[in-house]
Image 1 (cartoon, rainbow, N blue to C red):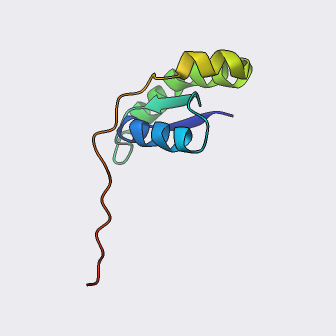
Image 2 (cartoon, rainbow, N blue to C red):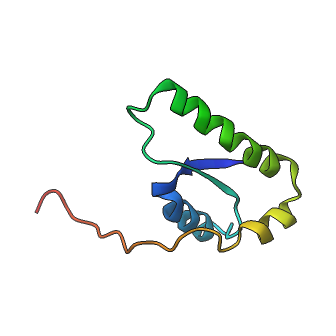
Length: 86
């Protein structure tokens, strides 16, 4: 399995994976944001990510778990629930 997300959400993806019992889940990070980018930029970004995605799809899970454990930046903080209606 290959999980791909933008850099902005890398820490969140890591925290969610760890919370679900997959602390070494390989997550391929791509630049953020994706919206309003030229077609050529999008193609170039995809081509750059393909090598890592192929590596994730073709490597043993044990190797990937060691390789990706602790690889991502720390979370910026805690999400706080704010009710819309009081």
